[in-house]
Image (cartoon, rainbow, N blue to C red):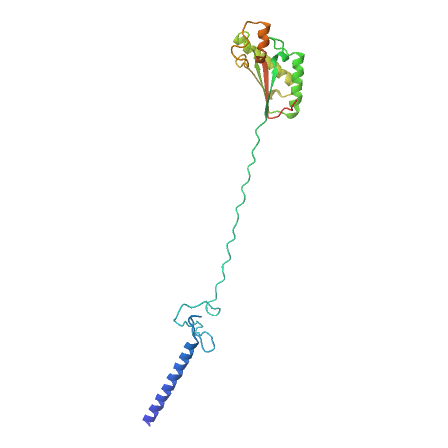
Length: 225
């Protein structure tokens, strides 16, 4: 009795072992590590553990599959923010400068500082061109020739340029915007050795370019004549 029971147990054990072996072989036959890396059953379904994890076949790296390791969605590319364009610096135009030279002989009699009618007419024309332009500054510089002493010529150039300023102010130009300066005989236009001789009519005429009043307007452009 005991012997027969033992044979049955052995037969049953052998049958179970064969069944398990066949199941394992079938599972292995259905596994393709090169394709998935996971163990699958006869139906091609990935074998899972009791906790729901996929069983790795132990051969090759596991491939990303929807049921086991879903492929992570690619992170959106960072938005490139273009730097704001730098403001373009606008260059401030330099104040306009224009210089005119008035013949002192047209403004004054020789060796005098009182304006002649022709001199007033010349200044009227100048004032009419600058009054509406509201200049920032008017620089008036008086010059004389070399005849006479240096000190006398310096004072004469100052008196003449002050007479020009006074007349321009009478024509409505702001006195605070008129700067005057006398330079006497220090900046002649004629060269050394020109106009040789004493105080004769020919010499006086030769030195005429040295007798002048230069007027420079800053901040406005004088209308062309």
